[in-house]
Length: 605
Image (cartoon, rainbow, N blue to C red; front, top):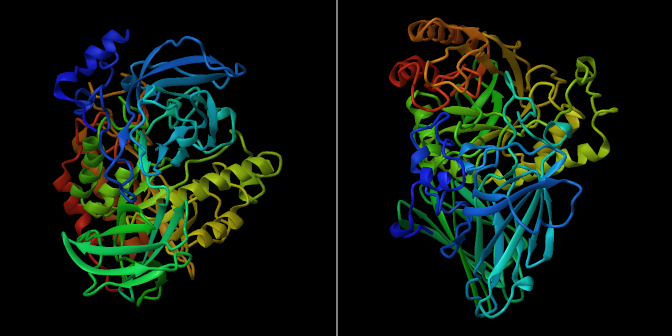
C-alpha cells in the first residue's frame, strides 16, 4: 500500500527528526534518497503466492535495546526505527550495534481489517535475524529461529474487538559469531571478508486477511521433457468438499486449465506448445489457483518456467552441466548482496533489480548468491531477466575449526553439537522448501569451503533428496569428500580446475578477486583489501581479460562453470566490478559482455 503524497516526507528529514541528521552521508547509493519513510518497500513481497488484499507494516516502529536476560517488554522505548532496515544500517535511522548479550525490541500498533465471513488474519515476516519472539496484545504467538526464511502467525484468536488498536511486539536476539547458527559473513569485529552484523527485521512485514479454508502453499514442479507441470497445493482450514481450479496463462492469454479434486496428490497439467526458459529467453507461465470449500473462496497467483538442469556426459566424454538437454557453460560473478546504506536490505526494489540487470548487461548468465539469501523479489527479477542462480546457505561456523578436522569430515565432533546440526538442517530445509519455486535457482550450496562444514556427504545427499530437480555442490571449495553434482575448486587469481571426474561436473566456484579502490566511493578511505591489487581501471580491464582468455583451454579439459569474485565491492573489500555504492562500473558492461559472449554460446560437445 503506497502512502498518500501528502503524507510523504523526505527520508533525510525523518532521520533528522529521529536524531540521525548525518545517517545518509556515509556512502549513499542512487536509491538512498528514494526510500519512502512512510511506506518503504511497498511492493508485494511474495511473488510466488500473491493475493490482492494485504497491508504493509513497513515504516517507523518503536525500538529499544535491553539486556538479553530481561524477559519483559520495555515500558518505554529508545526511539524510532525504519522497518525493514536492520538497526545497524544507515537507513534504519538508528545505526547502532546490538551485542549478543542484548535483545532488540520492536513495537507498533495497527488496525485490523474487516474479517467478515470467517476470514483469518495472518502476520507475515520476510526475514528476521535471528531469533524472533512475537507477541500481539500481550499474547505470545510463537518463536522463530532462522535469519533467512519467511515465517507467519495466525493472529485471529488474539485480536481485540470493536476497532481497537492492536499492539504488536517483537523481541529479537542475534548471537552473531558467538553462535553456530547460519550467519553468513556477519562478525562482531568486521574486517577483510567479514562484515557488519545485521540484527532484527530486514525484510518486509505484512498482514494478510485470508479465507478460513485457504491455500498455504503452491509447489509447481516442471517436467521439461514431457512439457508439463505438477501442481501440489498445501491448504489450511476445513477441507471437506474442497476443490481447486488451476489456470495457466502466458503473456496474458489463458492456455490451459485443470480442476483438482484430490488435494492430497499433485495434479499434472500438460502445457500445449511448451516454451522453454533460458537466459536468452526467460519465458514464464502465470498460474492462478482458485480454492473453494463450500462458500469459502481463496485465490492466489503464482508462476513457473519450463526448464531442466542436470549433470550428464557430453559428446566429448566429459560430464558437464546441461540446461534443457544441451551443454551450457556458466559464467558469472559471486554476488554477496550487501548495500552500504541498508546492509542486508537494498534501499528499494528498483535497486535490487538493478543489480540483476547489470549482471545480465555484462553478459553473465549465472550468479552465485554467496552466503546470503535475498528477498523473494530478487529471485523474481532473476526469473524475468534470465539470470541463473547458485544459492548458498549462509555459512554456519564457529571460528577456529582445525583444518584437518574439516578435511576429514569430522568437524561436528566437539564443534557442531547435535543441537547445532539440527538447527543447520532446519535452516537448510527452510531455504530449499521456501525458494525451490523459483526457476532461476539451479544449484544448492550447503557448504562454502570449510565454514561450518560437518557431516558433509550426509548433508549433501539429504539436500539432494529434498530437491532432486536441482544440482547440489559438494562443497564449494576446499574439502571435497567425493559427493555432489559439482566438483568445485577455488583458486585466486586463477583460473584453474580440478581434473574432470566421472559423474560430476568440474567447476571453478571462485576465482579472480582483482581489487581496485575507486576514490570517493569507498566504505573507508584507506586500508582497503583485494586478492590482487590493480593500478587503475585500464589495468583491471586488461588483467580481467587475461583471466577470461584462459578459460577456453579449461573448458576443453571439462570445465563447466566459472564464478568471478565479485560483482560489487563490499565494505573494505574492493574486488568488485562495481563500487559498493553502485555509482561506478569499473569495466564497461559492453566490454565485459563481449569477453563472455563466446563462453556462453551453447557448446556442441
